[in-house]
Length: 291
Image 1 (cartoon, rainbow, N blue to C red):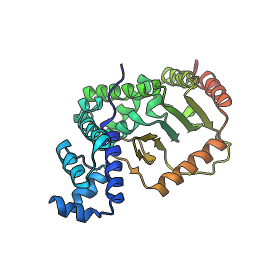
Image 2 (image 1 turned 45 degrees about the horizontal axis):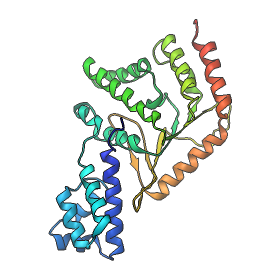
Image 3 (image 1 turned 30 degrees about the vertical axis):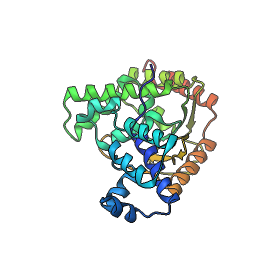
Image 4 (image 1 turned 45 degrees about the vertical axis):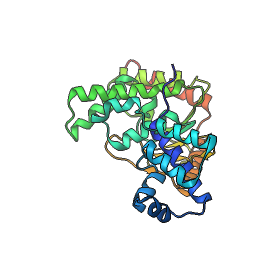
C-alpha cells in the first residue's frame, strides 16, 4: 500500500507554487500581507516553508490572487494534503524538529545522494549497527533504553524509502567507514554484508572512496535530496546533515549546486560500483570475520 506523501514536501511544493503566483502577479510580500491583514513575516515564513498555511488561509490567498479553475482546485487539495501527518509524527516526542524535517524530505525525494565520512548512513544501517550508534548518544546526553528502541525503529522504517521504484539512491563513503568499529566483529561483518546486498539493487549506486585515493573534497558528511516537478512547481535540491539533535539544511541554489559538484567530484575519485562491492566484501572477510 502506498503511504501518503510527506507533509514536509507537500508544504514546500505549496510554498513554491504560492511564491511563483505572487511573483507572476508582480506583488511584493509586504503588499500581499497588508492587503490580507497579515504580517510580512507570515508571508516570508510560509513561502520558505518554515510554517504551513491552513486550507482556509490558502483559499483566501488564492482568491486575492484571482486563481480559479483546475489550478485552484489542485492547490487547495495540496494544502489539505499538507496538513496530514507523516508516520514519523507518531514519534514526535523523541525526534528533534531538524530530524523530522530530514525524514520528511527523505520520504519523498526522487533522488538522494549521500556522502558519509564517519559511519554508515542511516538508510543503510543494520538494526544492530544503528542500536550501537544511537546508544552512544547516551554518553553525552542521557537517553532512556525505551527511547533508544523507538529511535532505532524509526531508523529502520526510514529504510522503506529504498524500496520505492521512483527513488535513485547514490552513495559514496570513505573507506574508513568499513574499518571503523561500531559494536563487535559480528555487528561489523553483518553490516558490511548488508551494504553489499543493498548495492545489488537496481536503483542504488554505491561507491567507496579508498584511503589511498585522491581526496579532492574535504568536509563533513552531507545528503542531497532532489525533487522532480509537481504541477507547475519545481523544487530546488536540499542539502542536509543527518543528526538527531542538530544539523543544517541548505536550499539556496548556489549552496546546493556547490554540494552537487562536490558529490560528483567524490564519485569520480571513488572506485566504481563493482570494485566498491568487492572491497566491501573483502574487508568484511579479512577485517571482521573470525577475529
